[in-house]
Image 1 (cartoon, rainbow, N blue to C red):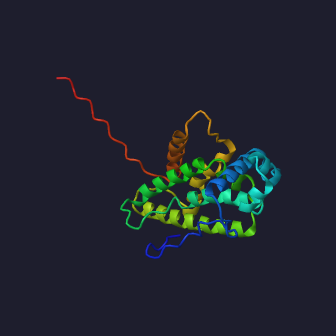
Image 2 (image 1 turned 45 degrees about the vertical axis):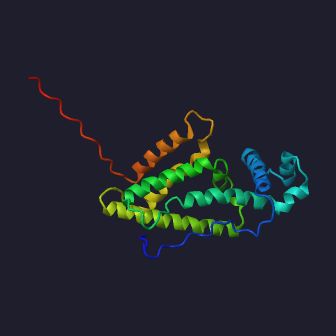
Image 3 (image 1 turned 90 degrees about the vertical axis):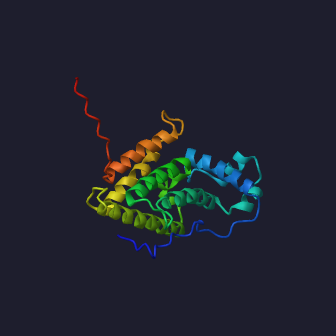
Length: 226
């Protein structure tokens, strides 16, 4: 699993595997994406139609079709941004001086934070994996392999440094990342805890999964009475 730091594997393209986008206003494109995202989140991919997206926007069909060919293209574009944000969370500059365990903790925090920031689109691949084209799934697997290569390399380095305690590298990586993966079952942005508190809690739990050794301050011994 160890990755050669002098020749790191390149991640998959950060653009969704689609045809060339139409020219036009990014603001208008974003309006379409947000309207579609709300419908996909509420009723699912299969039950959402282009007609419903058009109606939610209060626009005409040509307006939407100018920017997107079909609802699958919209769905995949919505899904790709969180995919990239999450699966590049273990990418650090070559001159980052921090030890492996510190990068891992930071990367896990970034992964969980990106999952929540991109709610609800970040959950689409977990809810409806069958909705994507084979080309999209292949690109998704490519960037996921990049992520796990980087994470496993950091795990093994952290263990060699004596800061992490675990057995199987890949199983540990998958287990730690399953925490944000299961968020789609229960997370709601209007829940009891604010987003940052959820990120903090899950990051601590993920760090326990990878066996991060925390250095606790030793309490000073009480002074004896004179």
